[in-house]
Length: 247
Image (cartoon, rainbow, N blue to C red; front, side, top):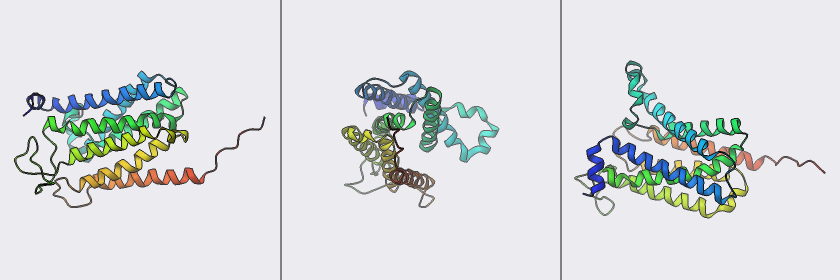
């Protein structure tokens, strides 16, 4: 057992918060570097990343609490315990709403903001998922070797689903950063991320421990997100660009 894993286990729920903050820090660092690589920040990056973080945290917490609304109506202060559960799709909605509000408030193009944010979100997801090795929560359903591994925090071989999802997120992030030319069409990077990552997530969920049957609510949301993003992609391809005024 590594020293980091021992420390996180002793910290308990705070270990989740530590790795979340690490993922957020990496995402902020990438946004700042990508903005500089594009010729300088188009907006106040400090405010942008702060509001994105707030949106992700509030949306993720509300998304997790929504299926259990009756419990949280009785104990509303439990919503403040952010280490007890976060919803990815709630966080995604929070990020999108925060980006929309920021773009309207500061006159920035929403599509360019989302292109700047999308690779950073994928890198943050990769960092958080791969940190499961330290937290001891990498395992999915029980499986036989060679696919099944005895992971930190487990006593029987399990599918290393969190590691798989982390590596796939890292691969998608690398593709988006490598193909910088795709940014010539505003919004393209964000739409690619919104189509591909949910499909990867839905596929990874097949190897998680699930006692309620398939498809899971998370898989339904993943497929819905990918379908909506794909529909937006097709609509934008069919819509002709606006005519430029003649000089």
